[in-house]
Image 1: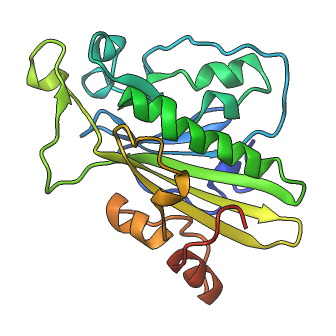
Image 2: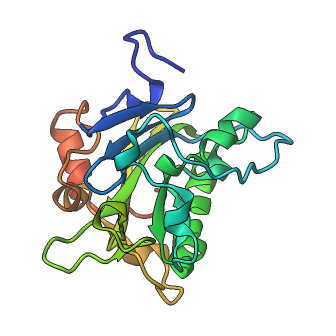
Length: 240
């Protein structure tokens, strides 16, 4: 969906800069040529349910110049999952909607126990939040975190420098909801890309301002004022 300004609906409250903006039918990606993966992924969680089956058709995104895009070979035998940024289960209204989430521009190398553990748990929790009667829309932005004071490991399928895929140290996710009273609430998370030993999601909740410092860009930057500043500074109790 596009709003009246011609921008995608999910960008209504802000969209960070990136080397290449990839507008899909139901979500938007900000792609990093340097890291050869998304810098961020932005969506409105789809509340609809249908009989559409999970596509599982992982494939390169040929809109990205070849030297900067990831391919399936990067992940084969690497020991890392092709981790969704925009969750497949969030986009299930139509076949093409679900299929688009399997573009490799929407993937990032994730530790299997992270991807299938706390990251999946957080995705499920966001869908539970979105299902609440009082929630009208749920916006989600997420992406990889690289700590430049730490070594960055890479996947090197051909042992060639230009064919490497950097492995993020962690991931962020920030959720913005609009409820039936017109109130905007935020919850943000920073989670290391590792097995978290089944720690609760709330252990990784942080103020939105901390995510901004780690990611290097502003979240929901079209929202302004003292109330928004307060919302970004605090840790709101989970889904309250």
